[in-house]
Length: 394
Image 1 (tube, rainbow, N blue to C red):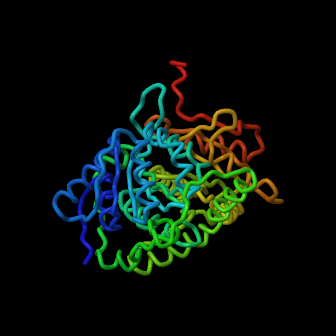
Image 2 (cartoon, rainbow, N blue to C red):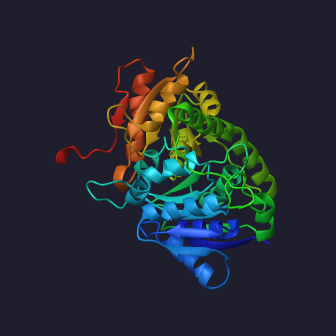
Image 3 (cartoon, rainbow, N blue to C red):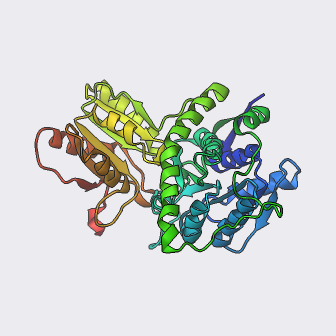
């Protein structure tokens, strides 16, 4: 039977790892995700989890150990954040290129400098081109669920790519909420026993892994990663369907909230989605036709779902906790690519918000709506807008 416990999101991620039964967990502590491996180490020490816990000297070593474990043919898991994820950067490419279905829990935190331990998405967004799938959780329950789904998709033979699941630093990682912990037997049915498709050690059937790629072969190797990421869209949809049947909770690549008659739609990811829903309810009571949408999956980018959402809006406002210097937000740039050849499309606006853990208030969201209304009325506005700047200290 499933059970409900009140827990921090970090604990929920650890419970997800316990339920997934990885054989190797390698980790180096970093704020705000330290509690994830700490809790896992407790599970292992108490005999509740059969896994090898590897204490390493850096995040680079943590992901390297996971690569070695996955290449040897076992399920592997780790957790990190911010500078730790950045330190893993070169090995993230290796994991994807070797088609190793590792899963990382990310307590999304800003990057230095200046040093900041609070939330934005710059850490995982900066790794969007490594070949890893990316999921973003709105709350603690979603973090647990999405880690299980990430393993399911990553290990599918049509995909075989690693995945990261992000949840907002402190807003989620250290906040307690009721979380339903699924029954182990049902999770076992959902995930199945891990059987490596190509990565294992067998002296009878030797293989080469991580070999040198000459120009005659390298491009084709990269194409297979592209192809796998394209395949992931269908596999994610199937995993969402199966998850709903087994656990009763439904996930979407893009979840919509009161969008059918909305002139302005606010799109975001992570915990900010909950704030947007409350704000939409308030504005609806005031007679303002706005809606909200949450992107649960960022890589692979939900192309068709995004196009369908865009058709409903006159103004599509993207609120994101990241910045790609020289172009705007990363989600905004991707959205522009998706809509570039569409004949009918909304006004697309970008709002950089909440960086470094700054609170996103209803007052900030009023500013977003006000700028969006001006664009709707034909007034020229900036495409990229920084919301909540303290101009007195600039």
